[in-house]
Image (cartoon, rainbow, N blue to C red; front, side, top):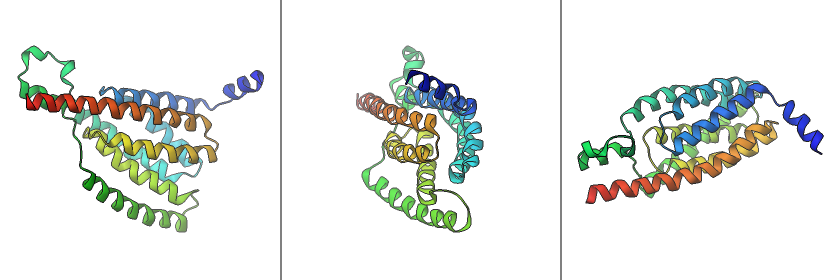
Length: 216
C-alpha cells in the first residue's frame, strides 16, 4: 500500500502540482486579506488554462483567462482596500480606518436575483457547449464557470458572501475533476471548501469590526 501511494505521488504531473501549490497560496492569502493572493493567482491561472483545455473542460480553461485579468484588477483594487491592521492606526482617523477595511455585505434579495440570473445564463452557455463543442459535462462546466466569474468579482470588491459561492462551486468542481482524473486538483478543492468556510467567518468578523468603528 505504501509503495503504491509513493508511486502515485511520484507520477503526478509536475505542472498540475505547481498549479495546486499556487492555487493553495492564493486562497490562503485571500482568506487573510493579503494582496499577495493575486500574484499567486496569476501563476496558477496560466498553468490551469493549459491543463483544462487539454482535458476538454473548455469553459474552465476560458475561466482561467478571466482569472488572469481579474488577478491584475484585484491587485489594483486591493491596494486601495488595505486592512487597518496593516497600517499605523495612530495616524488614522476613525473614518479612515473604516474606509481602509471596505468589506461589504449584500442583501439576500440581491443575491437571490443574481443567482437566478446566473442559472439562466448557465443553461444557455451549457446548451451552446453541448451542441457545438466536444467539451465534457457541458452544463456543470458552464455553471461552475459562470458562477465563478461572478464570485471572483465579489472577491475583488471584498463582498463577504463570495466565500459562500465558492463553497458550492468547489463542491461541484470536486466531482468534475475526479471524473476527469485530476486527482490532485480535486484534493485541492476539498481544501478550498474548508478554507472558504474559514475565510467567510474571518471576513464576517472583520465586517463586524468595521461596523463597530462606523457606529462608535
